[in-house]
Amino acid sequence: MGEGVADVLSEQGCKIVLSYRTSKAPAEKIVQQLLDQGREASSIQCDLTKPKDIERAARQIVKRYKRLDILINLSSIYEEAPLKNTALAISAWDNHLKTNAESAYLLSLAVAPWMNRSKGGRIVHIADWTSASGRPRYKGYTPYYVSKAAIKAVIEAMALELAPTILVNAIAPGPILPPPGMSAKEVKAVMKSTPLARWGGATEIAKAVLFLVETEFVTGETIRVDGGRHLY
Image 1 (tube, one colour):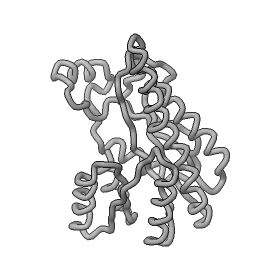
Image 2 (cartoon, rainbow, N blue to C red):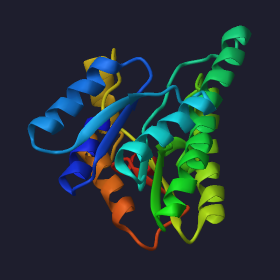
Image 3 (tube, rainbow, N blue to C red):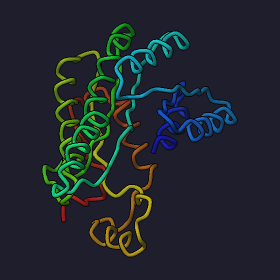
């Protein structure tokens, strides 16, 4: 999804900075692809669970480009945590809330001053089609579901706090890309349970991001991009 979003925004003339925690090679590969097309891009190491890392990254971006206008936060973890395994459920709670929800809040805080300085900005976080629908749907994923529901709350509160200068929204993906290890049978079952009868692909997320970057009158909204999956 990060590659698709970077490609679409760079096409519109945006200067792209990709952040990574440990996946340096994939990030640099995307950067090189954009550079080969004559676009401007770079990467930066940043642990989104650490406030000082986030603040440092924001300062470095502004130092290089003199401004920071758009934040697209695609960072997320998705791990099973059955409640019968108490130790795992507690650990997963902390990890999901910190990586998914708290990072969204900290990122918004870190970039807001720079966006205000430029008299405008766009912030887009990633929720989930289940939390956007208010329906957990799957057992064993309580920490994940709660963390994504918290992101919906974060963007609503931050949209109110940062208006009218900064627009804050979220995208709630459904079946976009099959997760690693999913069997062919499971892939087909998801398609059968989706009204549009297919997986969306990363481009659909990029299209939604572009809409939220270009809009002048949508804020505090969580948009499902799920092929109608929530209808079943």
